[in-house]
Every structure is written in C-alpha cells, then in structure tokens.
Image 1: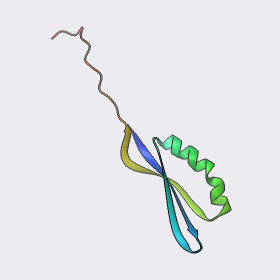
Image 2: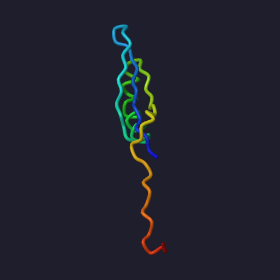
Image 3: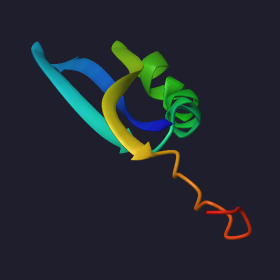
Image 4: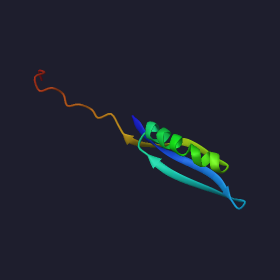
Length: 71
C-alpha cells in the first residue's frame, strides 16, 4: 500500500512561525522534493520533513478468480 506524504516546511518570518505543506502520492516523490528544497533550508533557518498522512494514495486491488477453476 502507498500513502500520501506531506512535505512540511517550518520556518520563521520576522519572528512569526510559519508552516507550509505540499502533498505527494509517495514517500519517494516527497523525498525528491525535500532534496530539491534543501537550498531553501540553507538560505534561511527552516526545518524540512516528509510526514506520512495515513491516507492511502494507492491500494492493493484484489484480482478476479480465474474462470477456468471449477465451481
């Protein structure tokens, strides 16, 4: 099963804490975005993390029973 992940960016602007979230359909996609956003973390104090939302983005689908099996 695959879950949606949120790229969470925590930062402060003029002393006010802010949080931004972007959603991705897999951990791999979120990780790729996190690596791309690391320059932002270097430019200003920001915490970046990928967080599992617990919501399914894809699930295992059951397959139909083959018709050539006896009843």
